[in-house]
Image 1 (tube, one colour):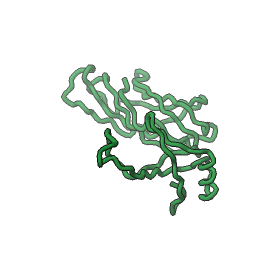
Image 2 (cartoon, helix red, strand yellow; image 1 turned 60 degrees about the vertical axis):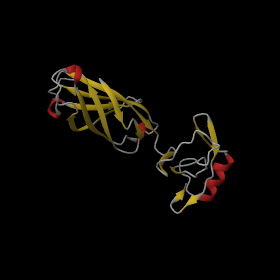
Image 3 (cartoon, one colour; image 1 turned 90 degrees about the vertical axis):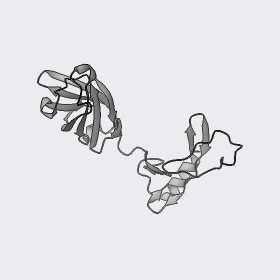
Image 4 (cartoon, one colour; image 1 turned 120 degrees about the horizontal axis):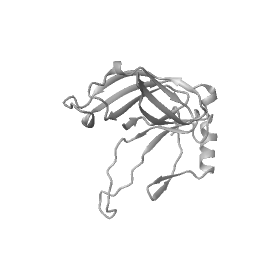
Amino acid sequence: SVVGAYPSDGSTDLSHSIAVTVQYVPPAFQLASLTAAQLVTSQGNTYQVDILSVSNKNSKCLHNYCSLFEVKFRAPALNETDNGGGEAEFSAHTAAGVVFSWRFKYVASGEPEVLGFSPKGQFVVSDENKAAATSRTVTIFLKNFPRPGCKDTLACKAEAFGRKTRVRFSRASGYVDVTPSASGMT
């Protein structure tokens, strides 16, 4: 059975390397054990998926109940007919049939997405009365924000402000200051 997959989602217009952790397969499981891998989109289209590697994460295990493997796959970019995104069902096959499967969420190409943020880490303060409780700017790098195709940074900034964009962390929310950067908007 699948314990986890990383990443668990991605854009329809990109290929994705996906690492899947599986357990309870025979301890002799190896790359040669897999005969095929495929994905079926929510639109019903089928794609072949490349099987890159199989790594035994518990080599001392001699039984199915303690086995743990990481299997790496490369999924192709999807065709235009699947550009709307949705969930896809991935499956890995042996000669005996499907050995494990998992779901992957495809996001329509061009949808807003977070590319990164800075700083990468920030202290969490539980008592705002202490001296360490200071505000800090966190920069979030976005693509296709506030909508796909938005390229004019001043017009995009005005549109984002017009929408009263807010960021929510658990139950607390804050305002968003949209400022253009050298390569677009941040």
